[in-house]
Length: 493
Image 1 (cartoon, one colour):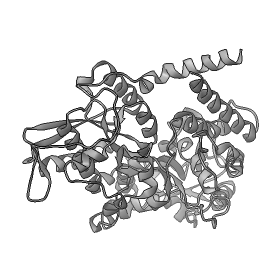
Image 2 (cartoon, one colour):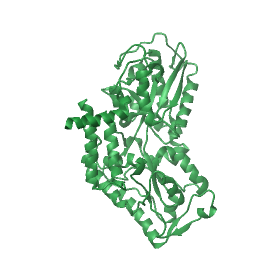
Image 3 (cartoon, helix red, strand yellow):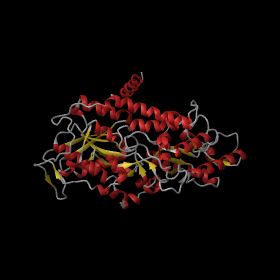
Image 4 (cartoon, rainbow, N blue to C red):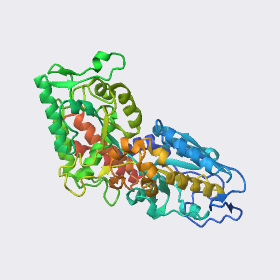
């Protein structure tokens, strides 16, 4: 009966991800072979800069999981590549595909229509082990060497590059690492004589000070209303107002559930996975303590009926001070507030040390990060196309300064240390507040990325859910059991 239950769970899980785990034929010769054998190109010449000149035009078909608004910045780098190599007979066209469609569409196309499958894919590196295990992507190192463009691994952050290996082979080149972060009404904090919190304890201190002012009727707020100048004036509000400093909830799969529990694990000495790739976050006492504290914030610092749909409304009308969202919205949101309330009214705050119970611990500055990377699709069997795809992948990561404006941190050290990057308006306005990319930790090389990550998210969602009862310890145990049931059912097959 237990085995039947496991198989039933597995069947349901696979229905939602069947295409991702599928393995099929391959375009042209080569089948599912994914070894990194030497590639010999005997009819490629080289320009004065040492870059390959292909004998006939190659147009790379690139699929990207990077969507609005940051795909516009990626397009700038792609145009730069095409301009640079217009005389080398290679160009690239990017198609952006929504995350909820990308992985299924990639697998389906590989298996049913390989001639129209992409040559290069840009995806979340946490999925690399799974994609490599299912032979959807192929190693990239020999393709780089075939055109005398070997990858200098010392030019990439080891914490980000490590997720681009599977089975000891390099499958991808990392582009970035990114996270969500807090958008902060700095003007409201300043008007009320307060500063941004820098530790978990300070979050409570600042929130309590704001609520004390609300109770006393001395809390200063103002609205970012474009149409009514009177609402943009400072006013004092009291207990009757709907002000609560933290815009957080467990509803609608909010952005914070994808970053806060993960970062809480890391900043309190925990790990995501064990040596088998199974979830290990359930043993971290720091996660339980942080979630218990957040649970106690409900109704105290977190108002009722708050979710992703109310975040910007409440930040805008002055009913909240802290709201968690993706870093890729930073430029547009900061511009919006600057244009209405003046420069600096809205700021951003990274996650370093914010969920560490001991902010002096060596791991307190760690931040959970997600990266994008470039890889070669298994559909590519033409060695010149492989070489062109490898050249493209390397160039795009080493020349990605313009892309970082979309709220991402570089994985490539020559970009990190480039004065053009560090002196840019975007860096000094919001990128540097995300934290040091060397302190970001990714999910790691587990093929069970989905249950490990999704069920860790659920611990947070259960904690703030309006309809869930029980203790945080119960929530963590339930999420862990669900993750392991999915993993074991998959292994039974």
